[in-house]
Image (spheres, rainbow, N blue to C red):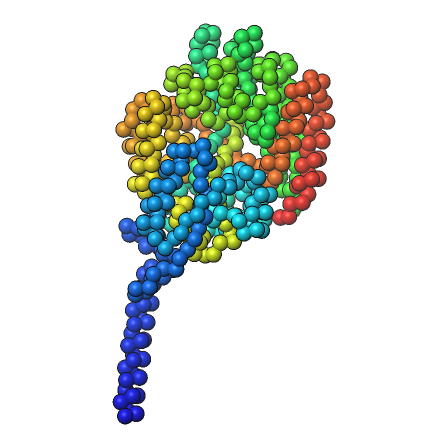
Length: 481
């Protein structure tokens, strides 16, 4: 009897070992991401036998109530995602990073109320990584089968010490819009793409008609957008705002180059008088003037949509230009940045993995092409023009870019065609935003602009010195490298 029992125990043990070996073999094939029809997607928990993956709940960033098209697209993505991953429960959050920035995010993280991921922008890379507000997604990115097709310029913005902390959604390089109809009506030739500050001023003066409510040029003068606009001119003058020296971050813009930029702004307002009479504008205000035909040149990165789709311009009347250089032959530096997805570092590994899968669900997929087609057809249904991204999340020499180009070619007259000469020069001098406390720096410069535009006798050197000292003492001195 004991011999029989012992034999049964041995057989049972052998069977268990055999099954364990099979399980390990199967599990090993799922690790690191497959490259089959699922697009390299691993499950949140290893599946063995009939065992279902553990339930995972993620909270997604849901579009704002006024974004009806985006909400429909998001609902469709949720449906498709849950068909593939039925073990994932999806909740919706209406909080966006723009609702309070890093300060509000810190509060939400402390309370455990932050979504599984959120959309942010390039200037936030330093503050988010320094404060531990962004999850390290390197392992997910390294296993992502389309990593080699991503736009590296965008990917590197959130790269710190060889680790990645965000996934790019799309980017931009600052541009300028020109209402060509105003120029044509005045018999004024359009400038070339290699224009300078002086040529910008002359062009603005040529179409400036304040008695008719038409301004030659406009830059933002309130909100952080004003300091952001001005920084492009800083770069063109050769001033890059900050530097790391002797192990510390130092403010540098109290310089001759910085003074040249403030003098340019003074001239635009008081000497050449090419700005709108009500100069206290932010981006939506400038957009309104431009689409109403009351602005010749606009410092605005979305001028094509603003002019053509919002203002009803003929396609040939809305021109897009690279930024001017300070003088012939000098770099026409322009700020580059973009939108990025950051994953909540407080989420579990399973939640972070599924958040990454949700973020990237339509990237490099046929569904992404289909979504692009839907956006084009939505514009077409409204007799509008679809303006493609100048700096998409994918590399412009990638296989996916070829597919997008082929799709765009199917909609002649609907998809905007950029001038090839413009494409050759618009981003050749793209430069990232200041890496430390950029938003605080922008706010300081906005206050300086307000003083210059409201006071013809403003002491530019004093304003520059005080602004630089404020950035240094209140912000940069607190940076730990």
